[in-house]
Image: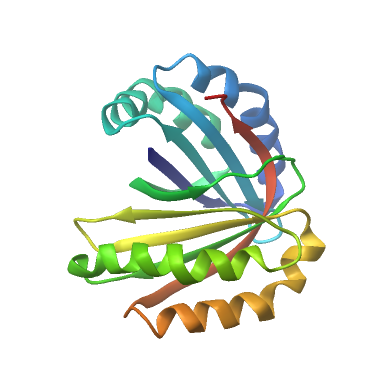
Length: 203
């Protein structure tokens, strides 16, 4: 699968109205696009930032939907967003949740890796990172997204609620350290969000 992420920052006082507008429209608009597979909307209301991820069957569907949806997306984000960054990813590992609920906690880790080491990163994620995460209380789902051309990757992990997200910080740090002993990466960012809206299409 392929994923488009939209990362927006702006005035925290205006994030609520934008989140409400996205919740009202996003899934209906996305579902009308060919190849749509799922959507997640995550927010840090206090800091004034949100991230959206839409999932697609293939790269062609992802790119076509980006063109089709850009005007409406821009209109929905304009009242809040001062900065908007859009990235395109290949979803190389995806462990879905059996039950997706708003109110879950979401942790996003961004890393850089030598493009030649992408496959090694995938193996370490499958053999070390995921098994470690699955032993942590409250862990629900995870994905590894990569940009092979530029050597970028990000790990997203869902926890059943904010309490288990917070309590997982120490155990996850240990898993991260064990993984980094096996593949050379540079950690560029570590952020935590509230899951505002989650949708997964059947199939």
